[in-house]
Image (cartoon, rainbow, N blue to C red; front, side):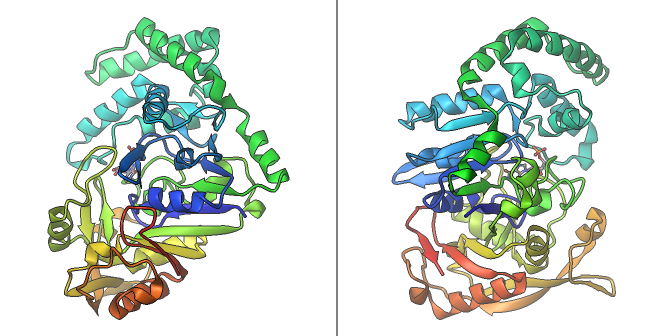
Length: 421
Ligand code: IMP
């Protein structure tokens, strides 16, 4: 069975943990979009792993991991991640393949990302400054370097010298320091040499796996509302984070996908700028006070709010979500009355879907339904029947409003804090 796992909100839904749990039943785990802007946190016993580019399947022996063609790879970051995993005793070798056609993130992408953000001032996106937008921009403009170029020193030098010449003019115009070709080439040639053994035609590799009847898990990064097409543009990332992106970003066709699992928190969070209709200071204080909701890639405090069922309903639609994984239920254990946004109101107009205009969405007021809190810890619960009845009622309502079946409930970061419904 091939499964696509996506974030149904604004990213950071706790996908890393659910992917890790589902990986048990998969043979191959594939990243299909985004880059090292993602941060998937996985706890195994006392050890905490934060993965940025390498699929979390790497933590389970015997699983193969693929960084697909739809990903943008920062080679320096990938080398560092592999070295870090190896230091922690995780085997990284023949179990990791990197697509030869994935695009490469280069220093001018990171620099342009930072420069554009600072020039935007009040209008900034709040990116992770990992160069993701400019790297996808070059891919679309057909001036990007791919992993194939990275591992061939002659081609790398030729393409880098052209690209650095052009980008240095842009950087200078923006008031930034130009880059040294020699320095960049030396660093990236070394990274290319280190990564060469991992580079493969991952489309062929995945089709061979399917011919052997193996199960593939497609690991989404970011979330539905950060999708370049379906998100709250321009406050989005630069890739198709939604389920459709899994096909384009891996070369596995749509009819080979069997199910889509949508991960959502029991409340809502967002990092970076852009509309978040249910944002609420009390919810933020509660969660931050518990030491929760700080970004795993940038450490930024996440913005927090009540569960937004208008958004998750739309996510179900766009991704074709069959099964829901609701995470962080335990974050609401102490709340007296839990609110859920069931519609938006803008003046006299009511919206039952997410308007496509970010400014309009920012002006929308949530229409809330209230749910009685269960006010008892859930982190030790392992069975659906042992959850407090009010927690079950809340979860059932959230699933019904989102329009999909409840599949998994997560009550903490550990592998065993997982309830299959
Ligand atoms: P970029 O992907 O770095 O260009 O950032 C664009 C927007 O997506 C910003 O609001 C980021 O905070 C957000 N973003 C990117 N990656 C993640 C992620 O993995 N989790 C949550 N938000 C993200």
